[in-house]
Image (tube, rainbow, N blue to C red; front, side, top):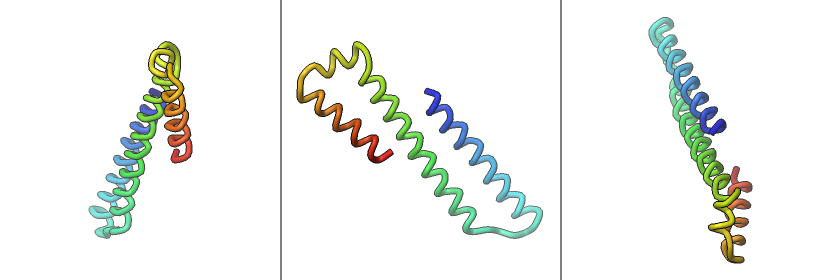
Length: 93
């Protein structure tokens, strides 16, 4: 939950900071940075991917611990599936 909260705070503060910077340059200096608008969109996409990864890791954490693990991952095939999914997430993190 801490990771999800951190990603949310990052996205909120970054969005607000870039929006105010763009507005300042447009209103005060009468100058517009086209690349800064594109960078704004790229960082929103990167932050959204970070949020998705944190939710996936939270789900894996819930499923891989305690009584849930014992109830869901009893058979050999399900344990292999869990290991493969964890390895997949760790590789692309």
